[in-house]
Image (tube, rainbow, N blue to C red; front, side, top):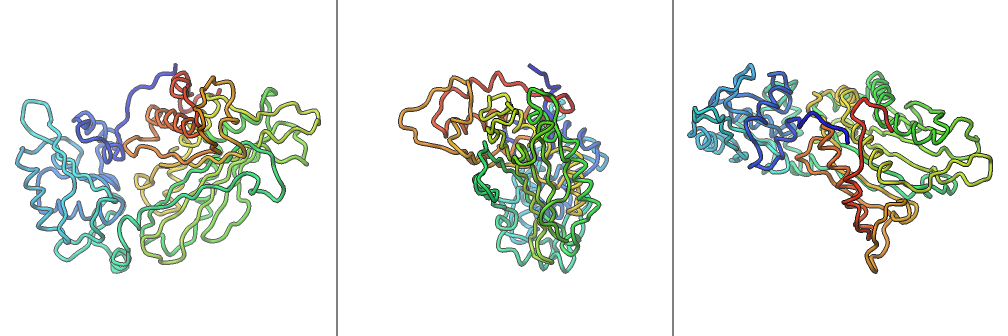
Amino acid sequence: MLCHPGPVTTALTLLYAPVDSITIADIKGLLSQLGGQEAQTVEFKEAMAKTVARAVAAMANSYGGLVLVGVSDKGQIVGVDNKSADAMSNHCWEKLEPPWVPEIISVPLGDGTGKFVLVARIQPERLPRRPLLVDGAAYVRYNGTTRPASWYEMRDLFAEASPAAALAWNLHAPRPLSQLHDHDVRGDFVLRTGIAVPLPASAAWRPLSAKAVAALAAALDRSRLAKMLSKLAAGPSLRADVQTFRRQGLNRARMAQLVYWAAPVGWPGDLSIPLAADIQLKAPAYGIPGAHLEVTLDVEIRSGNNNSGDGFPWQTATFDAQSLAQLFDAVLASMTDAGVVGALADLADTDSSAIPQPREMHLVCSRQFKDVLSGLGLTPFPNAGTSTGGHVLADPALDLADPADRHAVVRSWLTELALDAGLAGMEEVVESVTFPLDGDRIG
């Protein structure tokens, strides 16, 4: 088994972690990860002050996040007394319009001083509505600072139907493989994940940057996903031809599509490419309130289509748990890769900390999912029916950029997909699955 050096605390994990699991070590871990500096989704307050409500409102009117009271501007933990939580709650209720109080968690310093760090969690889906006002003004987060909203930002916030409607995004399932092409292709499955990046007002009026799209393509070429697809394509020969991520298909000022494919060396041109991935970027029409940059990643595995007797015996119509787990892991690792996240932040004109992580995945098979699995010794449930894939979700308290958290999600997803296919025993199988550490060789 490969080891991991330990958990990593991020703003995302603290935003959704169970209350009773948060410790001062988690706060210190977050401050270390931030380098002692505030971020787009984290603001420090040394003590209770009249500006706390502004900080809460700014997080609520932007991307959500954390306000840490008892942490200095330089990221040093100083703590506050045990009365500060009630004072903060009363302060928010009195100053915020409409009246609202975020979840406030008192985390003891544990150093004998009796002091605490207050963690105010502003989860966007729990807001009453936006904007939240303080003394008649709406505050927002921009480049890690709090400032009053512009007239245009105020207009867009008031135009939202609700914060949930503004921040939610329905990732639709992909079509079955046989419908993805002009001719029928005998394939294995298509996997889809994606994110919706909230756009600040500055990005609502400009096209997608060609430079940033090229940077995204370069980052994806270096990603674990590209390495994984190349490995699968090479098969026993250990040699593959690849097309790196490049623009292909429908590309416009506010739409971009990057396509990658891989095949064994010498693959006949009249056969469909066995492995492909494409990432699509879709910016909204100009000036739409609550707008998002939609980012959708599809991975198609069509390796089972080579049955033409052409001298290429390589074909993989079934997959073991190790291959599927490493493929799922490669997709999530790539979508949370620092280079990929940075390019998406440039495209959205926002801070990298405001880029969400993929929280769902669709898997659509060309046949029953149980027939895609091979040699796992799983036990079918009687009269379980059929399943050609599934829709799985990740715990928002887990950080998919952290290998340990990501591997836990992958194991959970494989277990859930097997259960939905009427198969028992995957929970034990995935315990023996191993993953390469980030940057290591796939294999």
